[in-house]
Each structure stands twice: as C-alpha cells, then as structure tokens.
Length: 346
Image 1 (spheres, one colour):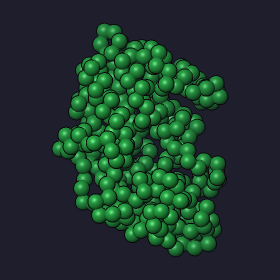
Image 2: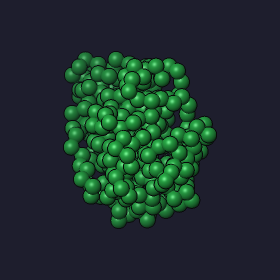
Image 3: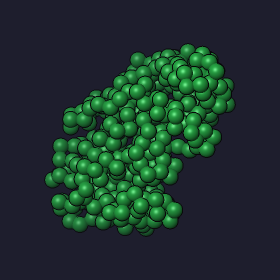
Image 4: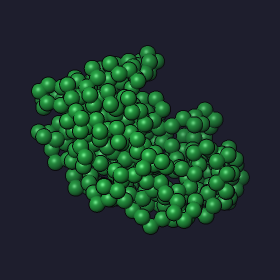
C-alpha cells in the first residue's frame, strides 16, 4: 500500500470509534482518513474537530455509498454498529472491488456473545474462552442467545465469497471516559451508575458473583490501531485475517458486585446518594431499572486475548476502579439526558 493509506471509518461519532480516531490521527497524521457521518450537524462537529479529514454524509443502510467507499479504501474500520448486516456486507463487497487487491475490513463486535449463566444469574462461571483454542466453538455458536453471532456469520460468509481479509474484534466491558468529539460513554458501568444515582442506592443482581473482563477505552483503541497498522503492511502483516481473524481484547477480570460496591462507595462519598449500601435485586427488579440488566450485569463473559497478544498488544490502561470517579462525575452532569443511548447508536 501507499505511504498514505486511505482509512474509511464508520462510527466516528461514537465512543469506540471517536476515541480510536483521536489516537489514530495522533499517531498517523500522514494517513488519509475518511469519516462516515450521519447528518450535517455531526458533519459540522467532526469537521471542526478534525479539519484535515474527509467526511461523507450517510449511514450503513446506504448500500451504494458503502460499496463505493469500500472500493476506495485501503482499510475499513467499522465501529458504527455491531449488528448491521446489510452495512457490513456492502462494505466488504466494496472492498473486493478495490484495485489491484481487495482492502481490509476491521469490525467491532463484543464478548456479549459469550454471555452465559450456567449456575443462574449473579453466579460465577469457570469457562474462559480463548480466541485461538476455542475459535471453532465460538464460531459455531447457535444464533439463539448469542448476541452479534448473526453479524459475525455474515462477515465470515461475505469474506469467503469476496476474498476480502476481515478481522472481528470483540471487546469486553469497556470503561473510561472517551476522547471523541461526541459520545464519550460506554454502556455497562455508565448505565449502572445512572441507575444507582436515580434510585439513590447501589444495587447488584442477586449475589453479584458473576464475572466479566474489563478493558480501558485507550487499550481498545490500541488494539484497533495495531490491526490497522498490520493491515497496511504487505500481505496484512503478521495479523490473522478471514476465518482466523477473530480477536478478543480482554484485560483483568472482575465480579459485578465489586463494581456495584465501588460505585456506591464513591457516589456516597461525593454526596450523590445517601448511603453506600448495596441492594441485592432480583432479575425482574433489575430489569425494571434497565431492560438490558440480565445481559449487561447478570451473566458471565470471560475471554482470553491470545491472538492479539501474539502481535504485542497488552492491556496497560487503568482498571475500572481508577476510571470510576470520572465516570460518575460525567453521569451526574448529564443525569437523565442519556438513558438508553448505547455505544453503537450513532
């Protein structure tokens, strides 16, 4: 590829995409970035922040536009949605039309597809999935009860059909305040903080012993940057692509009761709630606070980042405890204005 590759980014207005583009531009100002934005309002904000990048107004549902932009890109970094099948299919088809060789497709998914409750909600699971040794099992999950699985299947099918190198990146629970121009919050902890502040008391689902992995937003961005850097090297560098291009990006593990207790303690110390006590809620009561409660706070999602660690990636950022004060302050400032908005809704 040329010394100034063309990187087409979707989701630049979002949490993951916005933070990643900040880091990409800082590290590679010589690259040509093209950002997909939904409307003129977003376009004005993005252009004011980054006057050096090109913008294209549209969305993943515009099939012709996605094929066109894919055909012009050396790399597509797709962070706008983990669940938009027509969009990813069109982008991969477009990449196949790039001359003289197809471009590379990097897609954000999530470890929510690993979510399991073998011992009931709020109870731990011992299963930890490796993106190398357990890949066959992961890519054979049934569609039922495995979020994002249908999109992963569509990507691998399109990759095979069009001979486009693809990578699916599945972050765990992401924490930290993002640096992007618009959305700066993740999903799970911000929603927990918001619900805690609204009800005036901390909570967890049942015993809260269920286990997830955590990774700071800066480490997630580093993983995407590493894969883009490999993609622009001859033959995709040392990264795995296609059927083996599946990456977890997990840091340390945690129990959800630890998050609930830490949120309540900090919020109480800041005078935002009247007690540091944490209630044990039923699944039904937690779901009344947020409809996604069982999925995002009640089960187990445990992964091991064997594949990307072979490329030199490590989770070096702060843990969730170090991010909580800033996240609680951000949620209190915007309390009631962001409910149900997600990382991937752009």
